[in-house]
Amino acid sequence: MHTASHATPYAASVSSADTQKRPVNLSINSRTLEMARELGMNLSKTVDAFLQEEVKRRYWEKWRDDNREAFEVYNERIKKDGLPLAKYRTWGKRLGDGRVEPIT
Image 1 (cartoon, one colour):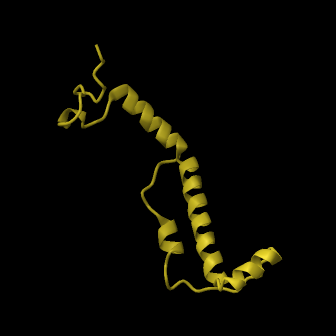
Image 2 (cartoon, helix red, strand yellow):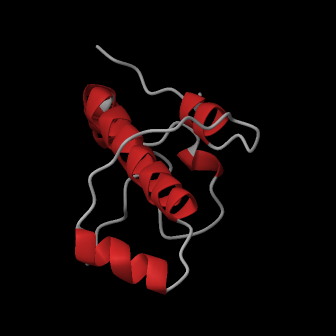
């Protein structure tokens, strides 16, 4: 079983401002490239920003999928036993075990 982790290696590795840049070859639609240049866009910055967002999205999507079993086990435990500290809650119409009081 995978366990949910609060560590965020993504944040430390990708968003560092002093990360070195490396040249790469890309194939880009010629019309889009022409328009981007006409608009004065910095292609490196633009591609880097979009790529960072896509990497971030896929990282967390994979993290969620890798930890799905742990989420399911936790949710089943809460359904069965209620929230561990529910009796200390001071808000909402809750029973002491975290279950919602039935509407009558």
